[in-house]
Amino acid sequence: DIPVVFTCYLYKREIILNYNLNFDHDLKFSEDNLFAWKYMCHINHAYCTCTYLYYYRDNSDSATKNVTWRHTDAIVSVNRAYKYMRDIGYSASEEFFNYMYPRMLVSIANAFAKVKNKNLYLRLIEEYDVRKHVKKLLFANGMRLSAGAISIMINPLIFYYIVGMIECFNRMCANVLKGDYIDEKYTKKTVSKIFRKFN
Image 1 (cartoon, helix red, strand yellow):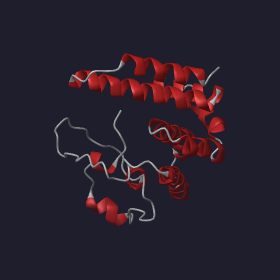
Image 2 (cartoon, helix red, strand yellow; image 1 turned 30 degrees about the vertical axis):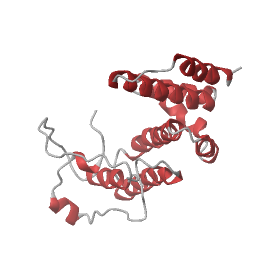
Image 3 (spheres, rainbow, N blue to C red; image 1 turned 60 degrees about the horizontal axis):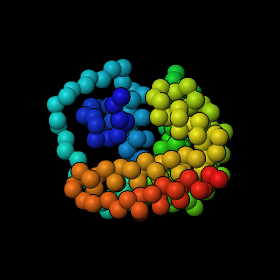
Image 4 (tube, one colour; image 1 turned 90 degrees about the vertical axis):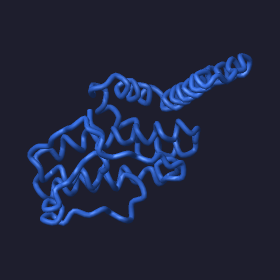
């Protein structure tokens, strides 16, 4: 399972020049995915290595860390990649779209839920008819992805609150590992507040 991001690969310059591959500068998010997807249409094989060739600096001010509606640029990337694939007659274009479009919707929903931005989350669910599209992921590889799709189909708020609980739990675990004290009353109050939303 190799992530499709620009920094995970070394590219042949001649392929980039031959097919005039560029970044789409109007996208603030997922423009690297679009480039990588287009590039992959023009190769027959790739090689993997476990050697560290690139070190990523985690920038808290980057576009990927500041979760805004611009995260939906990722859906634009999928649509553009799909159009590109169809235009060049790429044989797996339908398979790509049927998996990647709903997969990206779940990824963006997850990002909005993690930062507890319910307005953006509900806007995404409504504007992109997420419940309809995630049906395609019910039998996808990966239990987390299938479980996420099922929870969104039952009720999108279930997914929203589960992600919130997992994020809260992860923060508590990180605090314990750092040796910080966790207030038991606060933890019980937070968990009961989440469960009350379903009553």
